[in-house]
Image 1: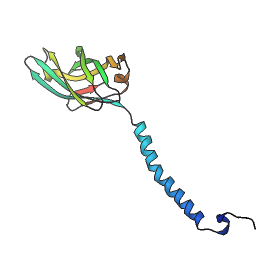
Image 2: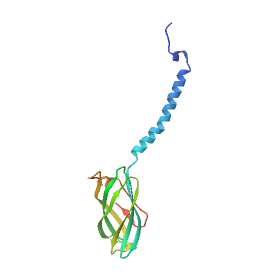
Image 3: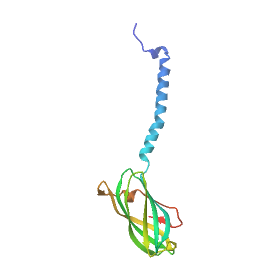
Image 4: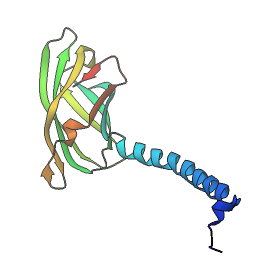
Length: 157
């Protein structure tokens, strides 16, 4: 008599194997989805205009920068344009944000001499004048930039 596989005799092993495979597969799907969403999560460089403060004939702008790009930025310099309340350009300058380590917030302050904070209408990040990553210029400061303002003074880019 030839030997026949157990599944030919209606063995309970077949439904058990199918059930085990199904449970294993459905258990893996959520982990695969989580892994994929973690890989596709956009990398961002958050730049927030956090505060304006009048100090001895100048307006001090305080920014909070958070680098979520997974690349340490060794130096970030942004060309910044300041507009008055009527939309006129009153200042074009370079703000040196220095180094921006990964996943750590940094506060940077810049003083605009001869200007009161109440005269500022909005600020424009005109672009990255310099962005150094791993010793070389990079486009990450431009490509990943996300702007926000906590104030009535708008931060645009």
